Image 1 (spheres, rainbow, N blue to C red):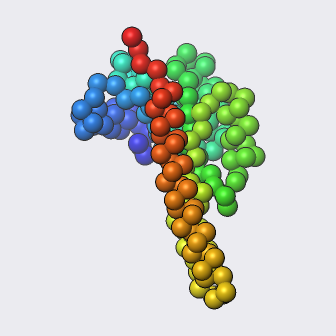
Image 2: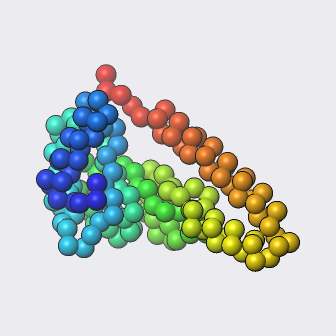
Amino acid sequence: THRLTRDSIMAEAEASLQRLGIDTIDLYQIHWPTPDEGLEEAWRAIAELIQAGKVRHAGVSNFQAWRIARALGRCEVNRWALPVAIQPRYNLLFRQPERDLIPLCEAESLGLAAKGGLMERAERMILFGIALLHHSLFIPVLWILLVLTTATAVGRFRRVWSAASQLTRPE
C-alpha cells in the first residue's frame, strides 16, 4: 500500500484477500512512507489485521533505516507485532543499504529481500548507452546485460522459492 492511513490499509488488505481468493496474507508490506502520514496509524491498522488473522506477518518496502527503527520502537512500546522483513533497493550499483539497513536487519533479526536484482532498468540503460558510445564495448556490454538479466530472473525465483519454503503454516 502507498497510503499509510488506517482506512487505506484495511481496504487494500481486504481487496488483496478478495482478489487472491485467500483468507490470510502471509506477508503484508507497506511501501513508500510519506512525511505527512502517521506511521503509528499504519502499524495500528496492521496490528488489527494480524490480530484478526487476515495477515500473518508485516514488512516494509522503501523505508529508510531510521523509519524502520522508529516502527520497531513503536511496535515494542504498543505491544504490536514487529515487522519481520524489509525490501530495499539494493543492487550492484546502489549499495547504500550496506551502511545502515543491513546492520539494522542483522541487529533486529529482520529478513531482507532486495528489490532491483543485480541492476535496475535505468542502470542497465546507462550501461547500454555507454556501450553505444564506445563501439568496442558494445558486444561485451550486451553479453553482460544478458547474463545479468538471466541471473536476476534466476535469483528472483530462488528468493521466492526460499521465502515460500521458510513460511510456517499454523496447524
